[in-house]
Image (cartoon, rainbow, N blue to C red; front, top):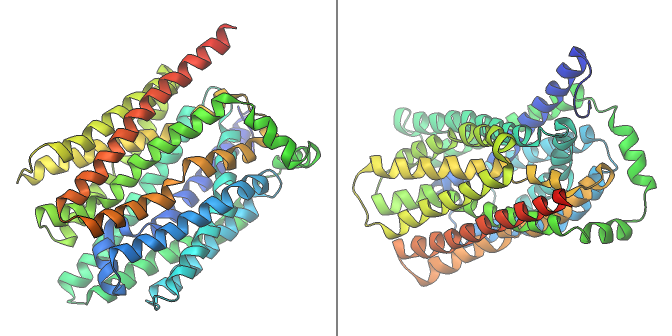
Length: 424
């Protein structure tokens, strides 16, 4: 892996080629795990489960993420990204094929646990550290923005294909929802398996060897953890990602919300949420370049506040029958939440963390920042059991909007700390 600013055309090509491989992998692995974003109602029907049961499976996935984040960071500092990411893609795709067989509810928890290991233990920290190394100083915003925007483009292409497959199967061929959903799952699974082969054959990481040796030589895990704990900016980064990630989680419920509140079909809701996915390249890449020019903290604060206002608009404004208005709100929130995702790892660069423990830092931050993977599905299920109709979504979206506003204040605090550090 070519680190930082390239010294030749060959190095430049190699750096971007490695980056594209990471981008493709990150864009293909998660849509299968979060298939509910576009097909939640169909999943509930085909698997004959309740939304509470589905929420419990995603809570299991979140628990596995939490368990794996710290060792994931440790692994990323010591094991080849090529091997880690190849395993992740192969395991995710293989479990997807099992998922496509529509197994019993006794098997489903084990599939989600396996996905948690594949996407948490061996993938996440390796991905973030790899991009941070490739970007170098002064380009963190655009690289992480392009990563999230680019992976969003991959997800949007795959989701468009998935919706087209589903719609063609149900509306043109007269297939059952079960058959259509199986075809969608197969498409996602084989995409992951194909990328596993490509990454194993073509991903090179020779320049990681020295960093790996250095990580093994420098101190114990406990010593490194104590060092990271002494960096206050790192904890603010964790808080900002914690807030921003919940705003993104809110978008997973848009499909079901639209079907219930506006009584539209699953296909129509799917097309609207897929249109939102196409906002990801705009939000992620645009915010990345803006962040490098106007400071990442400023763009993050604006995006957190704007997406929170968008959610509050969905909650507080009286329901309108205009699907155009709904589409505008959904797309606006989409652009801003993707801007947040594109930038919140870029602010890690200001924490002055040595590269030899960057993977561990990613693991520590993720352990805190991604706890919504555990409690938000449970919160959603809790509200669904105790309230009816739009009240569930109003409470859910309202809570997340408040958290997003707090995140914007955390961004301003981080900016103030960084300014004070530079002034000293």
